Image (cartoon, rainbow, N blue to C red; front, top):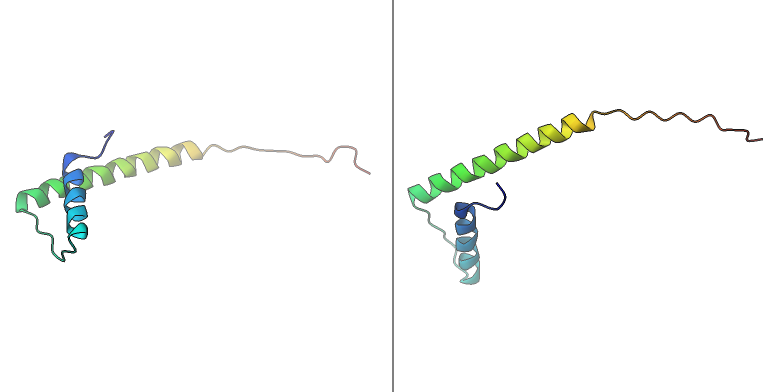
Length: 72
């Protein structure tokens, strides 16, 4: 997913309009809710995959040894 999905964008636009009009309700059709749910789940899945890859890469250990040299 390179960009936000169309259903997430549509939801964002509807919330923005709701806020601008000082409305207190936002209604979604059942199909809109299903589509938004599917897109949110896909985004969460992508985040989980990326976190797993990040953790796998961060397990590399870097060892540093210092002897202090000739300090007197």
